[in-house]
Image: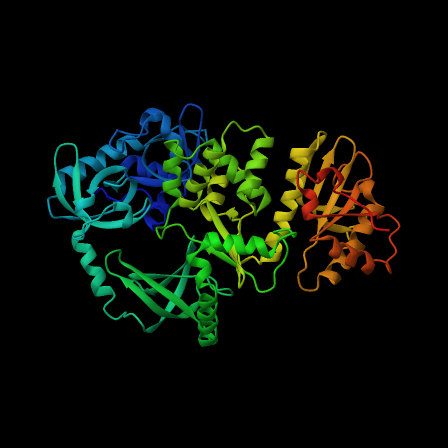
Length: 578
């Protein structure tokens, strides 16, 4: 008997594990022609796929990869890496642990005959969406054999785009509507009617229990019952599996979505604070251009990266649709995401937080062949695809004139997919303004060297320096700059809470590091110059007065401020306070 399942649905089954866990199981599967499933771990230069079968590695030769029903070209074999693949055991070559030859093509043909021979109009099937565009979705209903789900067959509500309901990788239930020699057409209309039954006990304006599931780009998913999930904003202190009370804010019957809000013991206080803040910043949201001028006016003569009391970080959301990593890979495969997007992601990944101007300056330094307009368009795509996130700062005086970009989950996944190390973590979205502005001020120093220093060589940002002779002597520098003539260690200071105490503690560790500078984990051609970057000259004077009682034998402290690290001021940006 042939078991018909889409690729990915049988890999964790007891039956599958039983056969792939040993050579005896594989021999039995070969004899009985049992379709199995394993994870593809490699695509070699000849487009052969390597499949992990417990402690054994099997091979699918390129000419046994597909029968064409999944519309896959041989040049696209690499897209199967890290994905489950169904196959038959073709033969086992004794004496060679890599001699298990598999065939996906033959498995597809067997399942195809079963589907076309036994399934009738009106039968129900389950499948996984493999390819999707605005008009239709291609659904794997068994071993890579695809069925067509058109936009008009999704539900009774007229859709502008099928992406309003489904995404790549989503498992669905459907009914066979029609079929011919080459295609099967399916419909999900009647299954959407079940949604109304599942939410019959869920009403707007009520409080219910829920379980936190996975985090998505615009919040977290809350399971309200086994069939229904709602979307809530991330609430600090919550994690996967927590049972929470949620308030049902809105039920959208067209998009089949529920907007909820996590409720805590201080909910009434939190709600009042939120409403008060919205009231205070109402004009700011309506008139962003006016707000930008008001913000800039309040900082006349000051750096835009100074700390402002009461300011909050506001994250901008670009669409409510979840974008899966499979959609990203589809865009990569069709070159919708290309080298300019990768370069932007690499810059943001390295710096963590960066403005659009800083991204442009860094790309120009590396002579990336592009224009300002192309960079803008590429960044819009990165935001739409949730590769990047964007935020601004707001207080009672208005909102910032610049936007701050950080890596999104999809961006981190794409970098890892390409072999890059990613520093993203889910808590990036709740980082405080003082840490973000410290990074932005550091970026400004680095881009100033790129644009103005004729002997600039290299840099590190947020770099740990450790004296190998003394494990206690470890410090994280804001930036390390290498030039032909000198090396520099920069420490950027913002007026956050208890900044004086934190600075004194850090300078004590810097003293130990500079005492053993020749034994550090980093190489310096000569003893580097140590520079403190304050928000303004007044803060630097405060720092100088603060350090008068401290004895530094190995640390000669120089100073700079944000405004001096602009092109017009950079030549005399570093000074000493005696």
